[in-house]
Length: 380
Image (cartoon, rainbow, N blue to C red):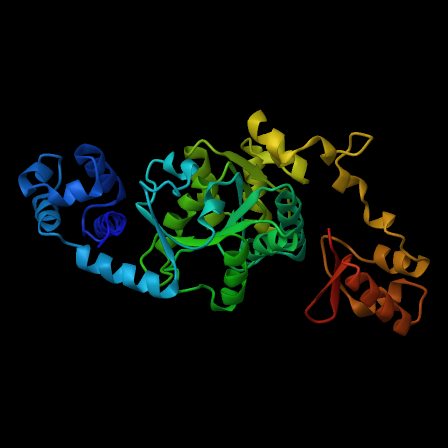
């Protein structure tokens, strides 16, 4: 076993010692100098650091190392990388939080984890408005070389990942399960696409199921990787609000997209805005809050148009040479609510076949999105 693999084994071993915990493991490594030195210490020396006797005896008897070797074999089989806390590839921002993961299992490009990143999270049951905003905002920010970090969940998370992918940008998915247990299952293909243009990571051992208690642990890694966190839609009691609280504790920026005050899913972002979170309705609202050294890298001089307005904001949907019929149908649609095709036909002075053909044209031009049941919504 090479020295590097041996170090990985010791770090993985510490994650498998019952009763130790992340903070306890970090304190031991700091006290003894390395994960290997912790395993080489006598039980009495370990107990002198405040460990319970059974935990100290477990470490001195090499507990966890056998499981660590099995994890390494499985990771090698799947071609996953294992990044330890002491590795140069470990994300610098994540090291700053109170309880950084001892190891990260990763698929994809681990260099992505050290890029300037923004976390974006929200409800698993978003409105059409929430999905559109999340997708657009993630796309716009990814176009400006921000890495979009989210949790691969249904709803807002997946919309953010897909927005970043549409921009051919980089995105990172942080799992609440083992790297080989993609949850939800229908996002397996999405996870593969993310790994090709970023990374999929987890601190949980391979084979770990997506238990509810894993997700708050996962959330502190999502916020820990990023300069700030954007909440798009979130109900009153939601994991997204936990992520926002963790971001504040980690001294990260907190942003929120305002929502309809009559919607339960708007409680979270609207409450955060009342508490002082930055209101976001376009990409520049996020980037202007970052340190100057970061803004300079994300906003080259060519980013703005001659009038000083961001180029993406000047490119209005109506500047794309819509025909009169296309404009008529487009104006019958809404960005915050899907409209049934019969309602569209009834609100415009065009025959139904022409309305259907025009909707298809708008959809192919990327201006309209069709939802299940022949419902249509403007793309923001």
